[in-house]
Length: 413
Length: 209
Image (cartoon, rainbow over all chains, first blue to last red; front, side, top):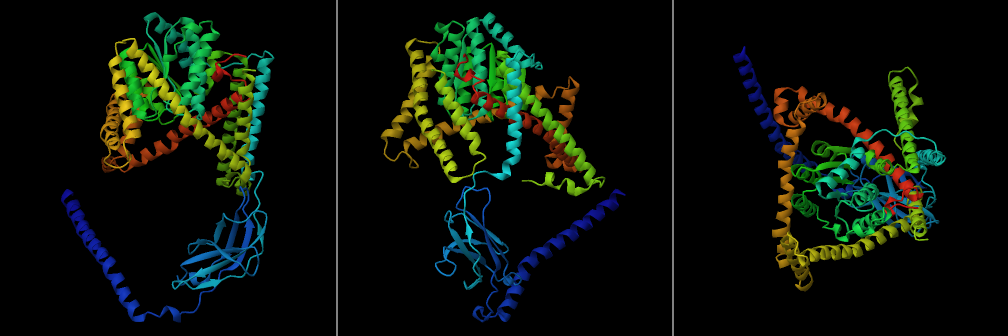
């Protein structure tokens, strides 16, 4: 049996080899043959009939745009069938008969062009020509005029706006309810519960706490969340009189974090404990920053390390070094690709949205907790919408309900 | 007043950034682009702040004879050498110039060395993650083994179902979890932005009223 299968596969291999050689040879032989035939039967280009022009040229203002843009469409030239069209050239003018200037080019097979250089608020006419291999152009009739107008509202984003309005309303409702004294339940986050213990541990051991707010800039919301958490952590370290070291990878983040830590120390009545040299700039370079922070870990041996914010490939190098020096490590990031590394190497990890909840959770301020409840409400609405649309789409796909009903929901805007 | 001014500025800038998302008009787009330019200008000045901070911290270490001041001296040598070569050497950007050589043959290899450490750390982290002590860790181990095998030719040679299983793991449970996290992250970002704009979240100013 094994021998038979062996022969069979050998035969198949030989056939495959022959087929391969024939195909490769055909690649060279066939074009050569075709070329030879073409040479004998070639028709001079200037004796060919002219291309049929593009027809039904229409010009319309581009919807939901910043202005200066008109969409031009046409029906393809009959030269497409013989493959003679090399391009379509689009011309614009302020007058229907004269003054047409070149606006742009579309490749064969394309029947539309977006002119991004149209004058604003003025009627503009278009002509489209089909160009052949000799460069000869065959012009369409002039289109009806179109006026490029800038839009004051992007209608494609209505759905986003509705979601934002619901979200803002939910947050404002829960913040107001919290202000009135309503008790709001927030689920337990083990990583944040551990912050108090981690600060206490550092105090007992007489070792510092290292706070790393990621490599991103202050325009990243994750960095802002990290800065918010730093404020709460700094209050606790100030209360326990524990050293807090904050190496920064961005100078603007450093300036903000210096102020945040300084204010936090002042707020708990220990402004003299704040040391400006403990919140400092290291470098923007990713792995130079890693080298600097790893050096601090190995030399200072911090009792606790907090990683909060946006991290990239450096996450595992940092977290593994932290683990090797025996620190308690708490991480929080919204970088989905780095989460597995933190989960593996750290004692506690805040996953995604928990990073944004941390400041409210740590401060326990009712108004901030109200924001969290608003967030949860919209998340529940999204989950319900996903379940309903999944059920409806499934029913539609098996024909239980009419498919057209789902079409507007399934179409991508 | 000390708090009201930054809060008002923050509200106006935040509101503009939110509203411009819905308004494509070229005037609004131009204002948005102008704001981004300001941010870049601000960043250029901020680097000066960073350099001053770096020099001050390490100067204090050298002055106070800190135990690890040797590293600070190395930092000063590197910093001033590169500044000197950059400012005072003609055509410092040209290939073969001392500045260029220092960058290509000192900084780049050092950074590459740091990056290459990642391979060793991935091995040690994987060893820890794949110890099948709990049901979750066992599931992780099995999933990881299938995905790793499905990504290399030997997986396909063992069975054609392994690459299929890999694709299913990545495209169904893995993608569902990622999307779940990303929905939460999106809402968290919006909530944080809104709380800062409305002045509910003030920790970025050091907290307080």
